[in-house]
Image: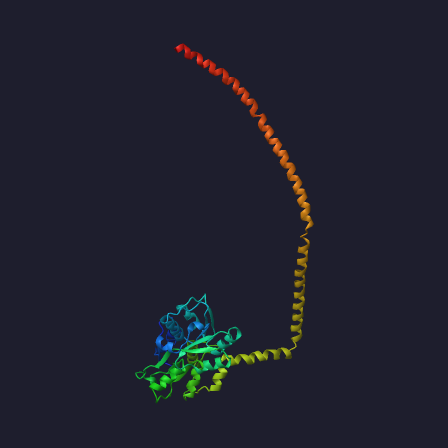
Length: 381
């Protein structure tokens, strides 16, 4: 079965460099976009009825871009200035960078995980468990998020800032599409709400997130593509790998993934067994002696470095003796006195001897000249 048409349950991206457009060009596939859910913001008047003071909280948990938009929208409507000390915990890197639309990214404390709410909770547990958290959500919040926060004893409050409304999909012919991509459990309920007699038949279904995958299986549908995965952290990469395998001649059978398979595929539960195997291999292998020798050599090499630093300090103290300063002070006091006396006497003696003979010589010549000048003045009369 070759895939020719794909339906993605999201609005059409505004950016031309979207990976979905590249998939359509590279694999000659027709891709259509249609949001299964429409989000409506809760007005500030309704939000005030909940009596939630936003400024009394020190951190915010952002689970989507819609949560970011509606959080700052309500703050503007209520004329609340969000302080710079506010901390933001985002479920993915994309939502973290989306905060640049409203705040300066560099000056704020922002934390994010790799599309896993469980990893985000672990980040909170390490150093930020004492914070007061605000969770912007819909009127029907996600039970998976709230259960994890309750188990770890994290203080939080649900803030219903927007509503999820099912969009009208009756004009769509679902039989024409070979692959259906869903991103939330609400999208599945919207699909069954618009098409109560929906039958999967030959259509393949792709799900993003563990909760959406579980909702598809609970609805009695078959799941063929699941993301995020270590090799495919995004849905676009998962679709690309799936289509590459189809080109090579792989035949995808309509076999559904069970709930156990989904839990095994998650990267969170793959990591612990790998960490437990490492110490077992070190104990059984003969390389343990080599590792111990290297550890001893490192300790021996580290000790002389510490001793050199300790020896440098007393040497510096010995080079600062007090008596040396007193000896220099005496010699300095005597020498400048002798120099000042000799210089002061030599200079005035030379100045007084030189001007004296000059004044006597000039006085004699000046007295004779004016007498010769007065005689010719009498003859004119």
